[in-house]
Figure 1: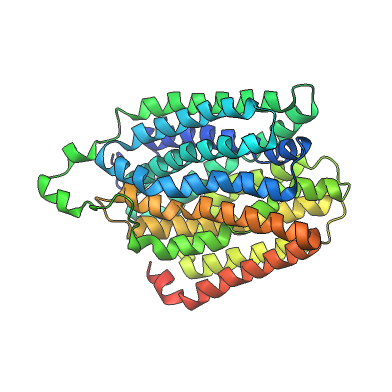
Figure 2: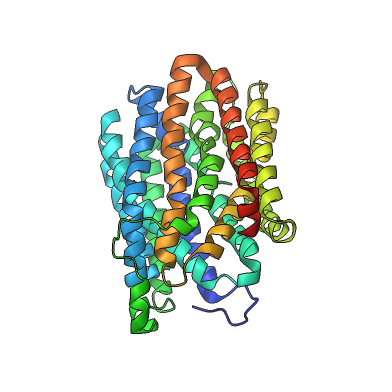
Length: 393
């Protein structure tokens, strides 16, 4: 639904949308560092951790196009409510005390995650002002990333306290349920597309609900490259820190999350001014620096520096790719377009988790982080090869 002023970002719809995303991402953030620890406590290997994280990504990827089609045909806010509800319900499956049981549990959670993100991005594309898309994307993704300030640390503290992983399950389920309640408040403000658009526009709707939107393939590919190394700096970083004997690693997530929250709106505004190409190039370079420095981290201080640098790079890159996708999305297929774009997140998480776990098993953490820096360099090469398309959006 349009904002009150053409150039105004903040509206009631946008504020409620951000609240829903904060709660949904808090659910995920509290599980990010704790789920790998839980799996290893149950006797699982780093490769098993990779498979568990990949199961989450697989369902999130497979269901997004269909969910995006439903969002276009019905109501984006309803998709948000559905997503948060599934996230909450999936917590019940984690109660089974077996490493293999985390695979179907995380797979169900991936469906809810797909709906949360697809509905959210579709609403963002609807309400973001045309001339301030990168800035609006910065605020939006900053709220998402802001969940990483406190909640990963809360999850680790719950794990180390007498609550254990059951306390984490309870907290994650509560955040998702609260997100569903916040999503209900959005239902009245979000238009139902079939009633809102002329009948002639029905031809603009894709016949195949599984098809992807070609217009957003480039920003999706760039986002995939940007997030391919993300598992190496989140889920596997906890295992790396404990292998190195670094204590109080929870503060890493506080530092990186705070950086993400504060930097994304400012970097999004900067991206509107300097252009998409320089923004993406800077993002990949910063990620490369952080990944290489992780091999030199022998204490908490440098670990925190690496988290800040990586968050800065990921923040400016994510805001920029999201702004490009919004610009390219067809007005009548926003749900499908943003579903196609956001597939890059779980796809990168799944592939990244599998290759990270495999690299650690085969070569150890040192060479894994060297390889991760190489992957970030590959993303920079993709940006340079498509510079004119990126700059033209």
